[in-house]
Length: 180
Image (cartoon, rainbow, N blue to C red):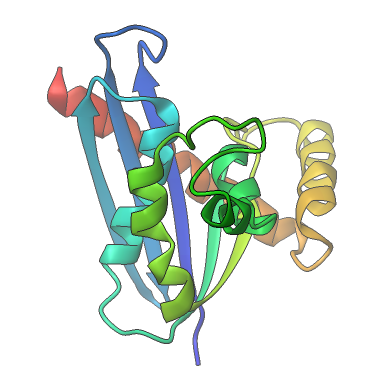
């Protein structure tokens, strides 16, 4: 069975301001098939856009039981899934270890059911890396990628994943531009 690969990114122009514009982008790949998604929201945050990109990608999947690899440059999103923060949040009544309400609870609760519907692996990508960078820069970034994700991916895989992350960034910025 082919693996469904999902690449996502979020963007927020004016992230720290009360009035801002956010965008999200996602690419789903299944064998030779590719689907691109994007959109945007006003008055949001970068983290919400990162999460929305993944949620919209998950919602686009029509068949349960998929084997999925998710690639994303959001440490917030990837760390939550990889380190299972959400399990502690649920036990603690959606409170952090610091006894504060978990931010973006609505999106976390929308995302979590997909973990039970599919076999999902999460991989962290360094954002905003140009595939036209020098070989030295790319090799250094690949080493960081391997530190985060293990040695499963080749250097060529890494370059492709990086290019797809850049495409998702472009899609997220299209979402922002469409709301301007």
